[in-house]
Amino acid sequence: MKRIFLIAITTIIAIIFWTSFSQDTVDDLPGDFKELAFFRNENNTGPIIRKYAVSLTDTLWQEMEQYGQMMPYTKYGTTTVFYFLQGSDMPKNLNPSPPSLDVEYQSSCVGKFERNATGLSTFTRYPFRSQAY
Image (tube, rainbow, N blue to C red):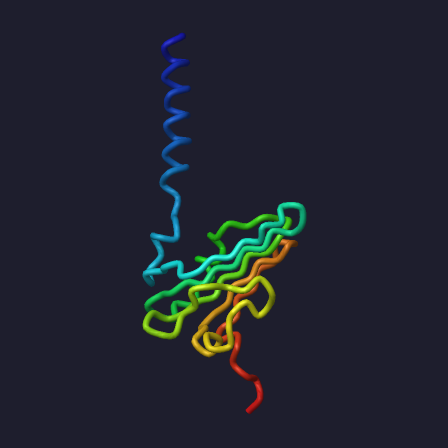
């Protein structure tokens, strides 16, 4: 009886570890995502603001949104990811205040993922393109 109990506990622990370590990560997504720049505010008493600039090989819209969903998020703040195609002008730094990118890089940005304090996420294709025609 004691032996069966130990085997059951060992099996349950093994399953927990296996499911924990076999989950998908950003490295499993197609598109060769590479982090270019990162910003996190120093203020730990207010909202936590995370901003990322990421490069990828192609405009894989669904994977871009999935990547954004996998990024760290806190219910007390926001997470923003800017996407750039490899070979285009890409930032090395991000600014804390919007629009976060220097003007010279805005035209190269192909996508923007945001998750706000309520957990609502939005994904925008070509976020800095003018809507006026």
